[in-house]
Image (cartoon, rainbow, N blue to C red; front, side, top):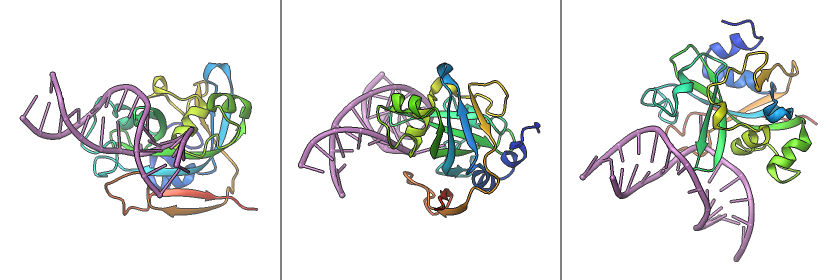
Length: 187
DNA sequence: CTATGGATTCGCT
DNA sequence: GCGAATCCATAGA
């Protein structure tokens, strides 16, 4: 694959990729405004064999980006209102991806606050995270591993903390798979 | 063609 | 705790 530090991790299994994404940073420079978060909550979604995944049933117009190479950004609209960002994983054509559910702001906090209309709870939810980073439908299909894209995936602290796995949220199928991963904050 | 419901968030009670 | 807001892919006639 590519030479990006995370390329190898993302190209493997989606569950492994989800755990490795925790603690990594996502940086965006949408509209010339730099913002950055450290990922603290993610969910793994498999390919056509995962009933809860958008890839279930094969590729279509909406989920085309999911079947691209690992490191591709997949953006979809939720409930007609919010945008949610995913990182495509696995080999091309598999359709697996990791939903970015939450993060802690580390740069551009003022920009995020302006976009969100509040100064707290800036990125503690899928829609909030995408909104804070300025990610929208126009970013669907972007390469997160490139060096000059508006949205990039960067390495984070070597030892981010303890990871806890739970059931996924907001889905009605395959609820039993504990594919939601939360990074426990140490004090 | 029309109908349906979702990987959510926010505001009000 | 509960329901509204609001878009579009997908399913069914």
